[in-house]
Amino acid sequence: QVHLVESGGGSVQPGGSLRLSCAASGVTFGSASMAWFRQAPGKQREVVAAIYTGTTRTWYADSVKDRFTLSQDNAKNAVYLYLQMNSLQPHDTAIYLCAAEVDGAGTFVAWNFRPPKVTDFHYWGQGTQVTVSS
Image 1 (cartoon, rainbow, N blue to C red):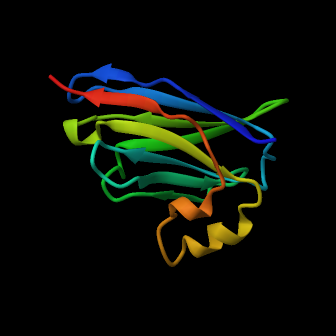
Image 2: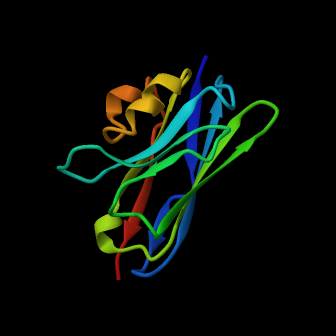
């Protein structure tokens, strides 16, 4: 059974930084694809960044390139996905959700032609709130 738990959200001033963590159990490092999405009040869920675990193959939204960075770790009982967020701005305020797909190979190929989308991932965490405000 796949289970995702996010942590690391909070409130920061513009220009600040946060590091989000996602612990994913029930997925295999090197087979799963994982991603961070975000959803602001009244807006659609949008992809922030995605990775095919066990590789350096990543995808970033234009709005976060050069500010956000993914990293990953393979532990005994879980795969960890991190999102380092720098130079945060008010428009980054949202609930950030971790997503995973057990067999990510097929969807990863599709990212060469289109952005990752919600339906690429079957499993979701509950989300963590990020608020950027002065």
